[in-house]
Structures are given as structure tokens and as C-alpha cells.
View: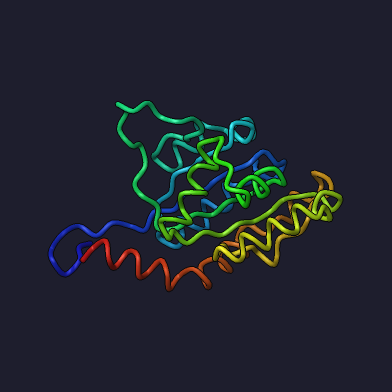
Length: 193
């Protein structure tokens, strides 16, 4: 496949930011939906989220290393620039830190930078109902929406790991693409021009 200039066209690239929630074990469902839609992807895990992933399986599926820590200044960038970011599952801690502009992990640094770079971003929270009621969390979601982040309306607030099967991976992907597709299309068009 090539664009009109004869250069090889690349697939759009998705960053999937994975946090430490029980449903993270099923993030492969999001990968499948994205790959079925023609996307390539790389995974950035929070330090605690890394423990919820089968790193070797994720790397085999995506073809890229799972990132969780900052790279050294002399290291090359292991992932292409993202055309979009999906944060799934997003925890209470990550949502609140991100909204406050705290970039104390690679994942949060990427999310804070994405706003300034105009990268379309969607978030699928996985927060129990007690934490979801906290005023700081409610305010953080409001701030993220105000920054243009798509906060999934279909995402349930889980209370136990038994709700993991109900986490709407595929539906959330479809919802995110409906809203973010025009922005993503514009970004990829500029890259191939």
C-alpha cells in the first residue's frame, strides 16, 4: 500500500496506556479490536500496571517492546509517534494525577504531553464506585473532558474482579473511534503529505 506520492503508507499508530486494574488482564480484547480496524500499536504500562500484563505475549502481538520506564537520553525512541491514545483501564490514581498535570511516570508524562501535542485521547476508567464518588475524581474527569479527552460513557465502575468480563473493550474502541476518527484522519493526512 502506498500514498499518492508513491511512499509506503503506514498504518495509524495507537498508544495503549495500561494501568493496574484487574481488567487489564483482558486488554488483548482492545488490541484485537484495534488490529481488526487496521491499527498498529504500542503499550505503555504504569509501573504497577506492568504486573498485570504478560509482557512477552503483548510484545509478540504488537511487535514493539512494552514501555514502563523512561529511556536513557542516548536510547532511540522504540515507538512511532501516536495518532491516538487509549488509556484502558484507567485507575483512580492515574486519572487524578493526569488531570492535575503530574508526570511522575512515563505513562503520565506521555498523557500530559499528548494534550500539548494535540493527540486525540480516550480514557476507559476502571474505578470502584466508592472511589468514583470522591470529589477529586469527579473533578478530574471534568478537567479531562475540558481538555478534549473522550471519557467513555459506557465504562462501568467496577467493584470486584467479577465485573472484568463486563468491561466494554470492543464497545469502548468503537465509541472512541466514532468521536476521534475525524481528528485522527486529519493527523495521518498531515503526516503523509
